[in-house]
Amino acid sequence: MNSSKGRAIIYALLAAVFYAVNIPISKLLLDHVGETTMAALLYLGAGIGIGILSLFMKKDKGPSERLTKKDLPYVIGMIVLDIAAPIFLMIGISRGTSANASLLGNFEIVATTVIALMIFKEAVTKRLWLAIGLITLSSVLLSIEGTDSFVFSYGSLFVLAATVCWGLENNCTRKISSKSTYEIVILKGIISGLGALTVTFIRRESMPGWKYIAVALALGFVAYGLSIFLYVRAQNVLGAAKTSAYYAVAPFVGAFLSFVFLKETLSWMYILALIVMIAGSALVVADTLIRYHVHEHQHTVTHTHDGSTHQHTITHVHDHAHYITDSKHGHHHTMAELEHEPGAVHAG
Image 1 (tube, helix red, strand yellow):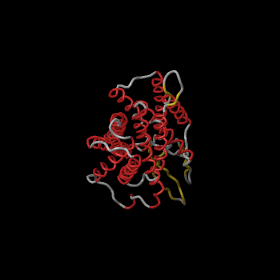
Image 2 (cartoon, one colour):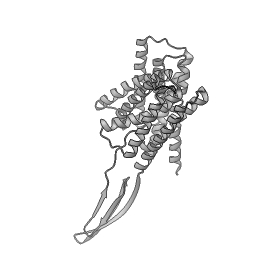
Image 3 (cartoon, rainbow, N blue to C red):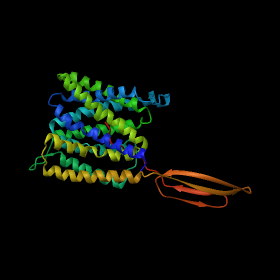
């Protein structure tokens, strides 16, 4: 493994860890900060933090990277969904356990994939369908309260609503992912944060003390802004699919932190859901790494045309088996059709 790839894997895992601290720390802050206020501060912290970071980072400011009017529908969709999703998440966290909310975050994989299939007509493998089934089953188990009844937890339903919003937002963001990452993250943070802040004023939530505002902004910078920044850095080397596979550890880190710092108890339903969720997540990782194992190779083709011998070196980059046959007058090369990526996990 070369140093750049090793560094990229560390970036991807750090991005997952940084996002994972969001839920248990938010759970603590919600005792002092209103739900929509918390959502607003998290995104404002991301936008402001990455905005400041961008001043010190070298980046291409060429016009080809900037968002245009053609991107406006996706930008609007991204911002509206980024206003709704964190509000739903904060409501869910305040009405349920932090550990449950962390694991339920993996339902975003299901939402992203199903939306990509239904709206954007992307391919889904049998392995991924099985993973979707397991993650959905685990999410249902995590949403059931108590051991003697099958009453759904309102907190879990709000968390699931947040993952659906982020699943749709992932698909909107993917349509503009070739544009400036800094511009996208700053827009997501500042405008979505101000939008959530407007909802805060409408709901007449009281503003918290300055120390809680500062902590929430710092958490937003780390858990949303810095997490996205490291995710993109990793993506530049590993590619979107492999980066999202490493990022899948985030819910499990969040659940672990919840038990360590919040002393949340384990129920038999949680243990069962955890096992099912691990199995589903492992299938997602396997599907991602196997389907997007890209390799490059070269081969030399020699053919004769009009009495002259010509030699060509051809490089192919693809992820499926191929065959090549040579003849005196030419060659034939066949490659299976590539499948589209079903969706990356949200990075904040």
